[in-house]
Length: 122
Image (cartoon, rainbow, N blue to C red; front, side):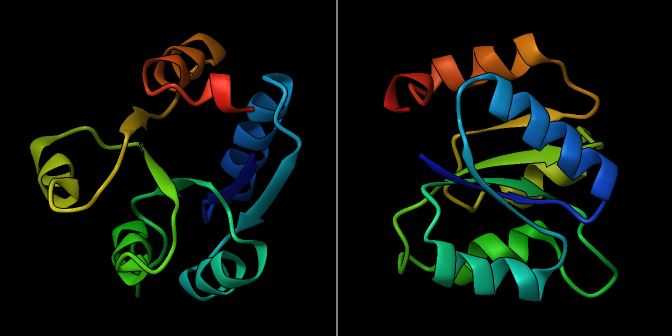
């Protein structure tokens, strides 16, 4: 399974990449901005996105997901440091599998991937 991690914090992106890799996924790319994410979605053709909601001052991870508009067959899991109603309300109108609240651990990620049947697809 091809996975794209969209995260502006390099340390968070590396942590997520390491954890996902430990779970047996090895086709992983990282994007640190909206523009890079859109380019990699077209080039890498990921099957799963881990999307940080707050990317930068100009764009959000939600903006990235909204650009998909059904043009890409990709599943989305949001990753955020904010679990308040404001952020959960923002993602309600997007098509996503679930979300993780940072900091998360391997077990939380495994539970989410199991619940949405991703682990069986690798």
